Amino acid sequence: MTPSSALPTPSIANDPDRQIYIDGKCVCVYCGVDGRRCILAWHQLMIEHVIPLRCKAPERPKSPLNDRKNKVVACLSCNNVKRSWDKKYNDAHPDAPLAERVADALKSAKEYILKRYALIDADYEPMMKEIGPKAV
Image 1: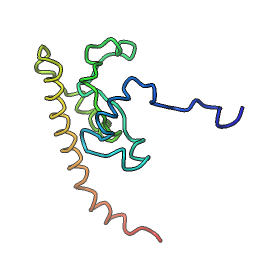
Image 2 (image 1 turned 120 degrees about the vertical axis):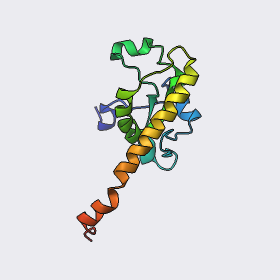
Image 3 (image 1 turned 30 degrees about the horizontal axis):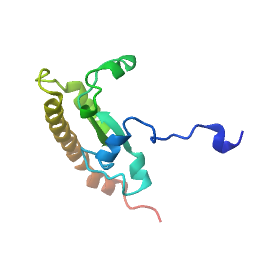
Image 4 (image 1 turned 60 degrees about the vertical axis):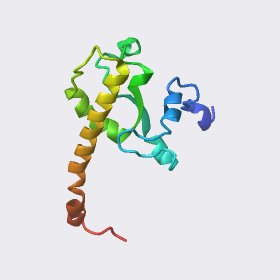
C-alpha cells in the first residue's frame, strides 16, 4: 500500500450539502470569512444548523430541523463561538414557518457572535503589548 492510498481522500464532491457551499459562495454567514480567498480559509468552512438540532446523533437525520433551510456555511471559529448561543437559544415561535424561524435565529446568532468577537478583540492590543515584539 502506498502512502497516498493509505487513507481515503476526503471529498465533498458527492456530499448532499455541497450545494449549500455553492449557494453560500463559500462565505461564513456570521463573520464573512471568504473560503475563495485561499485554501486555508476554505478549510475553515463547514455546514452548520442555524437552529440547533438538540438531539442525539442517530436521531439527527430524522429531525425536522435537519432541513436545507436551516443549514448555512459557517467558519469553525464562528461555529465554536455559536455553541454558547445554541445552549441559550429558545425557539419563541416553533409553529412559524421554518424559513422565518431560521431568519430570526440567524440574526440573533450573528449579533451574539459579533458581540463576543468585540469582547475578545478588545484584549488584542493590550495582549500584544504585553507579549512584546516578534523575535527576528
